[in-house]
Image (spheres, rainbow, N blue to C red):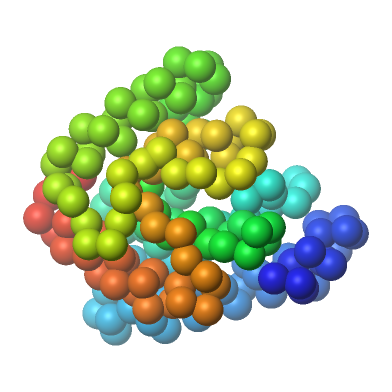
Length: 177
């Protein structure tokens, strides 16, 4: 995490750290998944600037290919206080754009509640909303769109991410989303 804190002091565009984050994190996550999976892994430290909450996500292309809409697995990287949040997540950006901030947060919370009823409880996970520690609009949307989540130390996240991604794939196969 100290590399992240040091890297975000400079501009994102020319940052080797940002390039490695986008390239290497998804490759490492994909290596944890079964060989025959159709899941796509992506990561972002931010688009036009450093994200308040960088992320790694796993998508089933039958449902979504981005964090804007649909259901996916996300690992939100919280450099301070040194935690990551693993979540079964509903995309936030489209809902926020469609309904405005307050309406979008409400719609995301309602959607997450409906999806919790469909999936049933997940082992070792709590019902959303999550607490990511950011006040920017998009992270607030992520928090509201959290279906189930779990806070972890970064060192324990790989196995939990792989297990939730496998569970997500079986839920998609069962037509839950």
